[in-house]
Structures are given as C-alpha cells and as structure tokens.
Amino acid sequence: MAALLEGLRFSKYDTIIEVLWNEFSEEVAQSDAPAVALRLLPCVEGIFTQYPLSDDFAYSPEYEQLYTELTGAVSIILEEDGI
Image 1: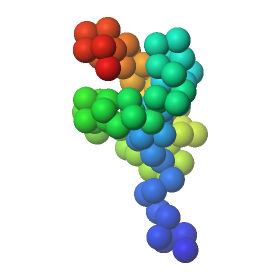
Image 2 (image 1 turned 90 degrees about the vertical axis):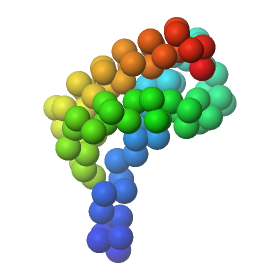
Image 3 (image 1 turned 30 degrees about the vertical axis):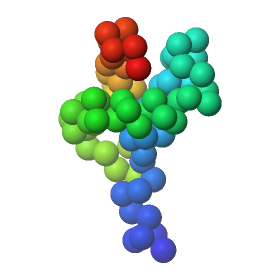
Image 4 (image 1 turned 180 degrees about the horizontal axis):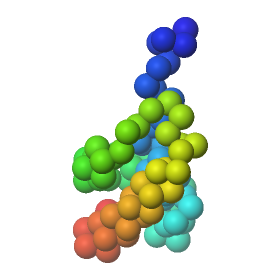
C-alpha cells in the first residue's frame, strides 16, 4: 500500500487551496477556492518545478519558500487577471 501512495501525499492543488484560504480569504470565498485553484495550477506550475516535491515536502524548510512564492504569484495573478 505504501508503494501505491508514494509521491501522492504532497498535492499541488491542496497547497494552492491552502494559500487561497490563508492569504486570500477576502478575495476568494472558501467555496470558490477549489475551482480557482484548478485555474491557477497551470499558471504556477513553474514554481512547483523548482522544488524537490516528495511525500514529506510539506515538513521541509523549502516548503515555506514555496508557500511564499505561491502567495506572491497568486497575488499578481488575482490582481492582473481577476481570477
């Protein structure tokens, strides 16, 4: 079972939703966050490629840097595109 779940525990989608809920709750309603996250995912994919994503990445020091970069990118996208 562990082999089946390897590489699946860290979710880019869930990370974007977390950023939306924590940092943009006034701009994006929680109920809209899943749909917005799907629209944002292709726009921020390049940020994720800069990190060694793994099952335990969310507990690494690099996670905070990823979170900060995503917050900045989402802020710019929301401002420019009004997603």
